[in-house]
View 1 (spheres, chains in turn orange, blue):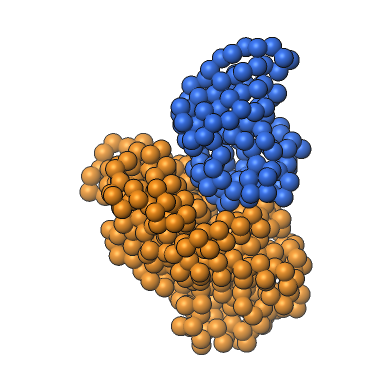
View 2: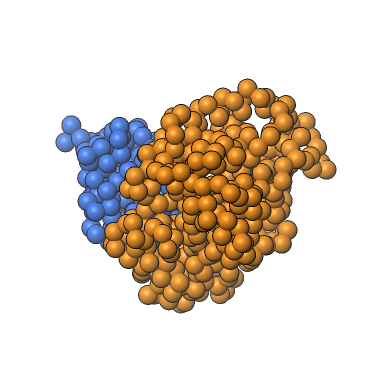
Length: 388
Length: 138
């Protein structure tokens, strides 16, 4: 790999250990994947924040980086943590709050912003064509497919290294020749709800693994495409899809999605038909429009006893929809920021059965949270959690 | 122990040289959730190394899988003194590569690990990308 004189010096340790180890990561990955040089990035988005997921192992490494001078060289944002600020800390041990606080503080020392959301694109939307180094698979697929920005599917350490150096190795989805679709998908069914989009995503992710599909007949809103992408990136390694044929169309392998495929996914993702203890909307974190839809549907209704309703979003979105938040809270629901079901300990709160409109959550919760799951669209989720 | 000197050639991933006892698995390994970072013992259910200590072993497994946070587990293991001496993979994946870089564990991939048996004494050369079997286990 070609390195500038400054990059060479960084690799040799002249800029301190934090920069050196970050540079080692970027250069080694670049070598392995055939990059010829490093390119500057517009932003980095980091996973590896939730204490539930991270445990104590990472704290040592983050601490070493922070004390040895690690500072983000570009806009750098953080994925959700295991806690919100108001509701959850009271319900868990003090140790969990302290450890989670320590992790966020260490990132803060490195000038990485405590956005604590998986939808950083609502806070600051990058422009089409910009190069990014994002982790969080749902944000990566949204960035590439909906926002038309360019990022590889980074992991927690490689996104962190890219943040501290401000660069990423130029390979994979940073090169236009690798962004061409290599499979065609015909939608033979008309998705009706956000959950249908998610179910199609789970089906396609399993089928296509890391291929880049062009999906003919896909006309979803950005929120619906967010569900589709998040699901594809969970059951597969998808990082980019096209919702319409790009200009250069070749003879490509073709597959189709039928109504029976969607039904099959829906039933395979429902592990119970019992009444849920917890209903969760907000995976990925809700947009302004999604919070609005929840509020409108909850007008005049009440969450029943022995059940909880969680709407998860970013602090940024919550502050912009205070009136809707009011409606949800008056109905007995919670609007949580900085966290979500997948990255916190819902089992310890007494939740054994979860209902959600997110196919990604339904895919992961049985293993990550050890709960039973039902996947239903928003209106059915709210019906299940309300008494009227 | 029989002496059966044989050199396997692969690709250099992380430089460094060491000699140690091989611990060989047929299964991909996830460091997050698969290895207890406080003890260095493999805890993944159904894994062929379950219950084994990684400490000071030349750890040979086909490839890594699972969360990218697994890289930090490797760092933590080495800091606590429970880490492997070297890593030998068939196909290096980014989780293990990054873990070996930050923990400074010599690492080689593109090695036919079926030729190595648990208990063999092996020499890993992370600069040349070679694994030399110095003596075979009985």
